[in-house]
Amino acid sequence: MFAPIIYTGYADLRSAQSAAAQSKFSDAAQKYESAARKLFWRNELWEQAGLSAYRAQSMSEAIRLLEMAHQKNSLSDKGWYALGLAYWTNKDHKTALSVWQAEEKPYPNYAPMYDRLSIAYHENGDYVSEQAALTKFLTLTDDASAHYRLGLLLTLSDPNQAAKELLTASSLDPQFDSVVQTLRTTLNVAALKSAPAERFITIGRGLGLVNEWGLAAQAFESAVSADGKNAEAWAWLGEARQQTGQDGSDVLNKALSLNPNDPVVRGLRGLYFKRQGNYAAALNEYLQAAQIEPNNPAWQVSIGEAYTQSGNLIAALAAYQKATDLAPNDATYWRLLAMFCADNAVRVSDIGLPAAQKAADISPKDPQVLDALGWSYINAGYLFTAEQNLIKATQLAPDSAIIHVHLAEMYLQKGDRPSALNELNLAQKLDAGGTVGEFAGKLLKQYFP
Image 1 (cartoon, helix red, strand yellow):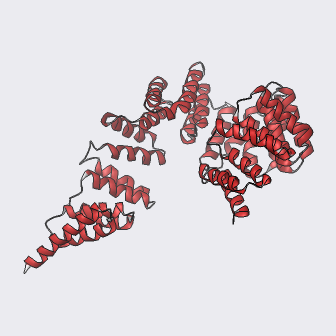
Image 2 (image 1 turned 30 degrees about the vertical axis):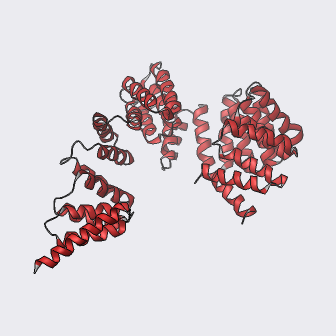
Image 3 (image 1 turned 90 degrees about the vertical axis):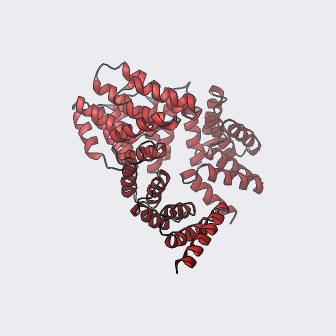
């Protein structure tokens, strides 16, 4: 009676193995499940079915089949891991975390599990558990990303060890060089601060520079705990909370009440109002900051941006020009003046283009400066010269999406549609999901429907 069932079970198993060898994972999952039901003592086949479903990107099926393997106590380390990944991919991060936590007991030396655990803990803001998971992971394998993430965590508790981990990450993978340099500079500057609050503020700002705002928020929390009357600590905490999806206005108001004459407080409040679309309030904050620090050109740029958003281009132009008066040897402010003129079609030929040329005289190999120069030439009607400068800019910064967009717009004006299409496609790819990529997509729809 059982012989035909057993025979067909082995036939299903052979079919499953053949389908898997041909990367037909959906078929393999079905055949493995069929074989598991017929060869009921072969519990490991449920895991094979689940792993095949996972490879077929059928996460619901993978979860069903791997949970069946779990019930039959036949999950290997890879099966546990895949079950967690399937839940994670299905946006059930809570269950994924519990699966990997459960895997730790039977398979304490399975390295990939600790990597995923650290990511899940980081998402929950459980940095203590994340540090423990990364430490365990690094005892099992050497990984640049893990050293980097551990270094980030240690900036708050053990700066010396943090520096070692960051340097290791950089030595293993050069892609970490720039962020590691930023963080090492941060730690060195922080070490010179005598007050604990100032050290934490410095570290928090450095973490913000590398877009680690969750950890930055912890640093600023430590700063306000160390000195509850430090207005800048409260202001930076407000910025970190905004960056992590919270409002932050309450702590920004606290900062203002502690020191209304702190330019950092005023500047961060201005940034808050700018994000809210309240440009009048943002402008007021920047004007206050400029009164406190009249020789700081950065405030003039912020004032110019706020005036631009409010539609007062005359006042905006004056602010950008004042920034260049305050820092005549800094290419940044000449570039920003040129971009303002070009973006808003304001006195491009007599103010914007000369500003871009001045910036290029100061920093002739800066791709952003060359981009501003090319963009200014486009808006002044000099397409050939614009092309020369924009091509130089792309050679220096081939991954800059905005430069490729400007080059595309130049080609459109020249009537070179194939070149424009190529540049827009490249810009969209380079900034997929970003504002520049979105703009490139709109131009593609407009000109290449």
